[in-house]
Image (cartoon, rainbow, N blue to C red):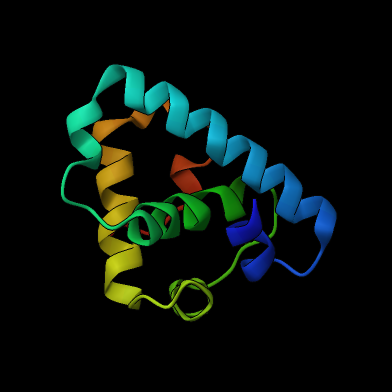
Length: 101
C-alpha cells in the first residue's frame, strides 16, 4: 500500500487501490506464478495501478505512475497489457475504458 500512496495523494483511493492490487496479486500468483518471473515488482505494480486507476475513477497517466514508481512509462504500458492478456477475468469492469497499446 505504500507504493499506492506514492501514486495517489488521496489516502482513501490509495488504500482502496492498494488493497485491490494485493488481492489481485495473491489470486494471480496462485494461478500463474510464472507470470511474475523475471519482472521487476515496480513494473508489475505499475501496470496494475494503471488499470486500477480506471476502476476507482482515479486515473493517472502512464507517465505519472512511472515517475512515482521510478520506472518508465513504457514499462507501465507493457505491464498493463501483460495483465490484460494473462488475467482478463480480473478487469472485465474496466477493460473497455483502457487504451490498447
